[in-house]
Length: 227
Image (cartoon, rainbow, N blue to C red):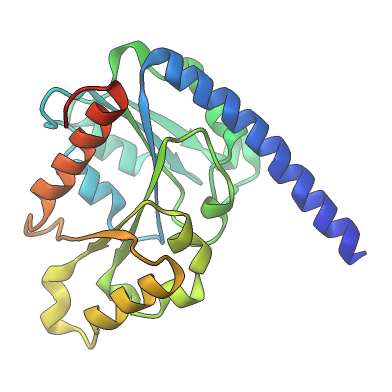
């Protein structure tokens, strides 16, 4: 029984990866760089996107917003006059706690790929499942807020190991918390040695310019232009 379960999981992941490769090919043909943006619920993904999506110099940004239900985050981003497509996992996918490649593929026709340079896929808030499923992205970014504690890299190593950049958000709260930032960064290095990280606050704006520049440089590097 255990071997059967393992085989089923492997087959599901293999099927997902095949669809993810098809998504990636479509994004490449359109010349769109794709970021899979992940975190636990409430870490601040949408707030961090609000700070940058409308004003990355020379980069047209679109967002694919993943949620189980509702459109609150999509509405916040759409108010900034960037193209936003809502993808809910509840109506068609059984309320899944993550986006997978097939869900993203179902939304491709609604995405204005010819009008954007960067697509940010804001995944469903979860520290487990999103890390297991490729969706056709170029790169993965995750947010970990200081309110979550220092132990999250050790408790959810795959998420931290799978990401190219770790954003440490809500650092404006450090003085009010019993949180050891050095310990957190040490724990990140234990599961993903040398992982790139940024310290920022969506509330005060600290570190936001570096985050904006990082996204702009990512797109330009994919387009073959000088960073």
